Image (cartoon, rainbow, N blue to C red; front, side, top):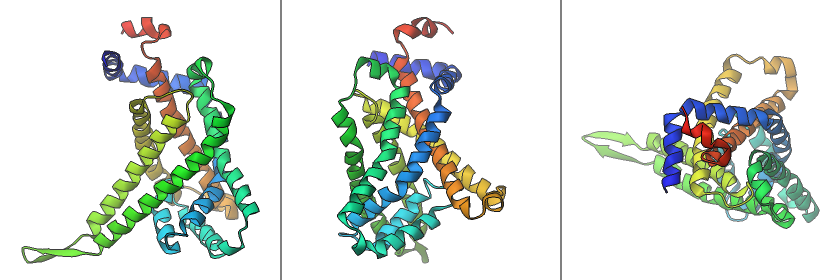
Length: 296
């Protein structure tokens, strides 16, 4: 406990020095290159992954409920271009009886690619852990599919909660002779639910992906940092594409793909920055940093 408080005190006392360490570590680990690889494979994986989750959950929930919830949360990932994805997913869902087991196996393969690349990127950032302990290859092979299963269960829970909040949003109450609607409160709670879910998902990535046992406190630290950074970046991207961007003029029919790829690359960069924050925080007080922490 004393060591944890020492690390925290040092970061609070030297925030800019810690930030500089994170940025230098990110540069040395080729973070931009790694985030580009994560974005590319995420673009290949996101549609198969969503199709799998929707196909599984359509057995217990209605198509409209699933698409409504997905639309709310896709905006947290693909800035301003969620509608095009929703339309494509709706087409696939309408033809789900034509999807056979062979196609499901193909979807499973492609949906797992982003997790595999992300695990490899994490191993670069958490190199000090990989040197000490390597993960069994069977664990690495099964990890993406177990994570896909957990994402499906999480999406089911979020859909049920969102449905309940939307029902509450249609209600109203009378106070001091005035009729008050709960729609504003419902919208605020839905946004809060999305942000909390985003932070928990990021924290779960940091807890599971690196080799070895990572403290849940460190994972949550990375999740909060990455979640705050992404919320700021997401709103900035939406404003940029709506106000200043000429991507539709330059790329024409490819604009949606370009916007999605740019959004995913920014998301990948922020995920890896959050991982770098955890890695640098872990290294505080290490043998290589003893002199540095005792000065300044």
